[in-house]
Amino acid sequence: MRIVIAEDSVLLRDGLTRMLADHGHEVVGAVEDAVGLVQRLERELPDLVIADVRMPPTHTDEGIRAALEVRARWPELPVVVLSQYVEENYASELLSGELGGIAYVLKDRVTDVGQFLETVDRVAAGGTAIDPEVVSQLLARTRRREPLSDLSPREREVLALMAEGRSNAAIAARIVVTPRAVEKHVKSIFQKLRLPPADTDHRRVLAVLRYLEAR
Image 1 (tube, one colour):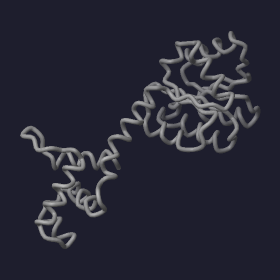
Image 2 (cartoon, rainbow, N blue to C red):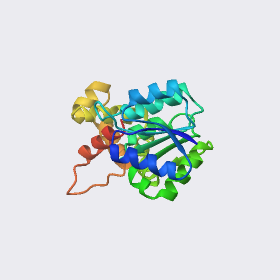
Image 3 (tube, rainbow, N blue to C red):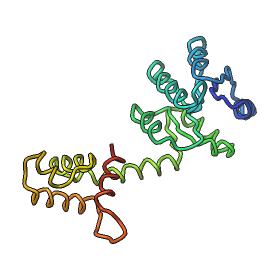
Image 4 (cartoon, rainbow, N blue to C red):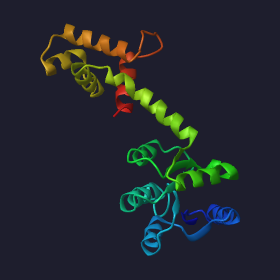
C-alpha cells in the first residue's frame, strides 16, 4: 500500500515510516504540514493518508482542515487522522460527512503496532475506525445536549433570556406574559434539565451553563 504521512513531529513521522515499511507498505511522502500534504497529493495520489490534527503554522486545526479538503477533493482516498487528545469539535466535523475510509485515532494507540496496522488495513478497505475514547466523549457530549431537546420553544426562549442575566420580571416584560407564567416555565426548565432543589447549588446558574454547553 502506498501511503503519505503528514505529521510535524519528526520522531513520530519517522517512527510511522519505519513501522509501515517494516510491514510491507511504501511511504511515498512524509511531510510536516498541511500545505505539503495537499501539494504531495496533487502530484502523486497514494492509497491512504495519515494526518495529524494539529500542524504548523498555528498548530490548531490545519491538519483537520486538510483532512476535510482531502475528503472533498478525493472522496475515495482513505484518511487516518491522528490526534494527541480528543478534539470533540474536530472529530464531529470529520465524522459528519460520508463515513467509510476514515479513522480518528489517538496517538497513544499508535504504540500498539498490531492494532494500528489493523486500523490502516480496515480504513484502506473502505471501513471506519473511531477510537473508543473519541466515541465515549462524543456520546457524553450528546447526552449533555439531549435535555435541551425536551424544552418547548417558549422554555428555550426563557432559558436564553436567563442566559442574558434577566430576572423573571424582566423576562415577563420581554415576552409579554405574567411573572407567574415565567415562574412556571423556569420550574419546568429545572425539571427537564434534571436540576432538583439543593442548598449547595444555584439552579438558575446551572441551567444557564447547560444552555451554553449545548450551543
